[in-house]
Image (cartoon, rainbow, N blue to C red):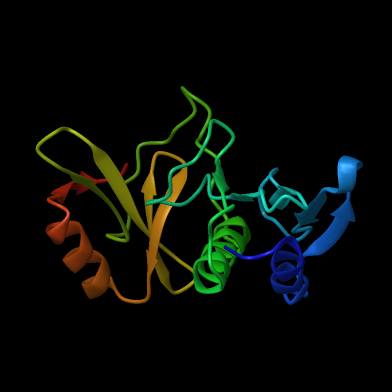
Length: 166
């Protein structure tokens, strides 16, 4: 387990994060360039060693109802990996859903596809800015450099193409 000072030193090493001292000796770190309403990356780091990092847009982390992961027992590599994933997820644009009733019926140019599994879960795969983004509703699940990587991942997870998103 890292000490409070070690955690602060790691967080301070990210120039894109802004340190904010809060009550009771706790410290928060904000990512002001966030493309989402959420700007707090690290929340209530405490001299006791407790603290939280935002992972609400990520998969594979046990989060509370605010999307935060408790980092009390994290080592340096784990903490850096989570911080980088959190910052990346907050850096990506997630489009707003169209207002109901105002959606135009238009076939996508083959770049947006819907994938489903046997349990009925659906994921959408979209090409944006030369990367392939995988969404579960409005939540970003993963990003891929190539379409082949995305297809391989989806197949491994039991998903198959369903239809073009219209």
